[in-house]
Length: 255
Image 1 (cartoon, rainbow, N blue to C red):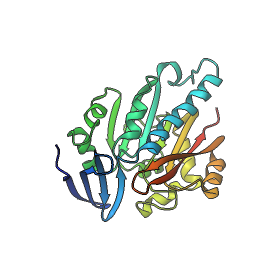
Image 2 (image 1 turned 30 degrees about the horizontal axis):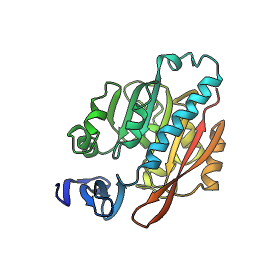
Image 3 (image 1 turned 120 degrees about the vertical axis):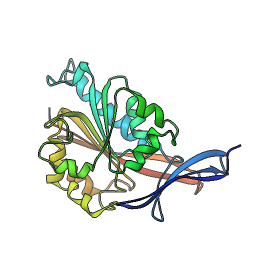
């Protein structure tokens, strides 16, 4: 039987102290991996439904749009040749691994600002981390997604002007509850428009939020994207004995 609690990794980062912990959840009898940033719990393997949903809903919207276009060929590298997907924020890897479950995905670029988080996966400290890092479609890119979004060359620092079929972002708690003040300019018409310019026509932008759908966020996406929707992801909360919910916002680029 594994130890009831272990601190697997710790580091001082630009965002503060970050630690990876493994513990046994007594109510379920399962191992739980948790990430703390300072004194705040950032993510937990107990609650992953919304991270998985971000990938599934985003790719489902992309599939519906491609199918509606007829043969699905975007004419610039997407379509039958396979989808190019970017995930902003690696975390415990649930969104990224769910993206890779879809065999229509040709490439996955995951942008993560903390080298330590990438090392957790590459070093096998997290379940599924080695499989994610070792998938030939995967590229784990150390970088600041928000800085890349400001760059006139686009989201891929190695391929200026590169276009993606889907960009899925799970970094901040909500568009108003940020991990760092420097992230704020993304959540503006100008910020989202810069991201949209790196998405192929008919492609999808997805955003995770820990709050219920918010009219301000919905209006913001509608100002930039051709078609938008908000999806409430409801799941059991074993800690409270009740249910919790998060939101996945989707927007499609006019095609």
